[in-house]
Length: 119
Image (cartoon, rainbow, N blue to C red; front, side):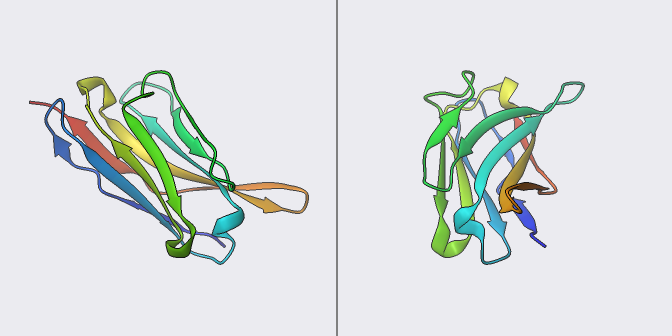
């Protein structure tokens, strides 16, 4: 069983920065593909950023150049550095893990952390 716990969400002014963290339990974190999703009120959950077990990253067009996803396997933690925040970044941010299992991947979700960008 894997548990994901997000932290770092807050109220921030437009143009500000936040760093989200997602701490995972379990010893297989280093082999997991990790991702950040977000869901704004009335909208579908969308993929924001992803990082493979090898450290390759990808980003949604809406956050490219502003968000940076990284991981620290020694701490079983994945991060999302968010800079130049905009009101449209307001959402609940969720951590997702895809854990290798039986030839495929088992998905896990965190509980979410609220990010509000407002003056």
